[in-house]
Length: 217
Image 1: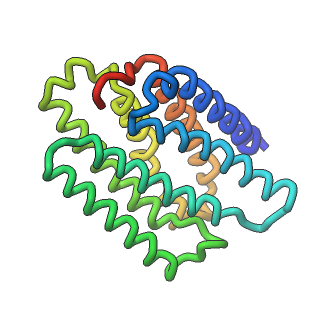
Image 2: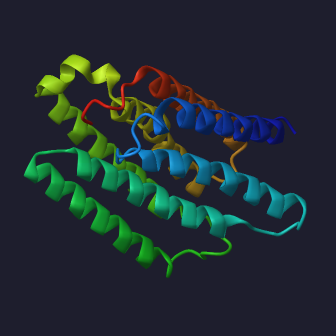
Image 3: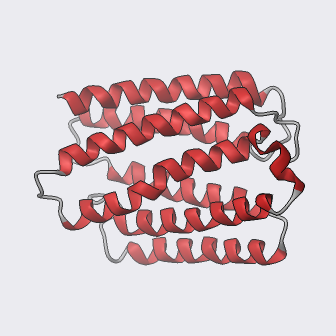
């Protein structure tokens, strides 16, 4: 019951994050590529509401297909954003390869796991790993440029920080979830995961408020 209550709190916090982002960022810089993060935040909110509604009101045995679609959009979008924001040709090529590999792995996974009845854990682990690589490439480029002087004013920096906080610990979590799903520690691991989600959105809110969207990302 506690875990279920936390889900509702997190969905409410997602809406708060989307509203704060819309107020502080979207109307300041509509031309920025990062505006798609706002669209994705709103999509996340309504996807989670729809997922819970399917479970509660329709008593469907599974809503994993919603989150498999969500996962694909999330990783492709985020990887594309980092590919567009890095300047070094070699980094652009690396992230382009990562996008292609992720899409290929996702298609292959259709023959391994059920799209309707299983969450694509394999592709989540791959996507999170690829995204982590892309984030480090971006941060490495920033550290070797004058962007480091105003990095805290960049929304992409805050987005990167939030994603690292969430995805890096979730890679081992999803491995444990896949191979030790019957373990008695799983509920406690889910609690940790919920706190990571809370930290993720808290950092995003700070980023929307603190960043200066007109600065070149």
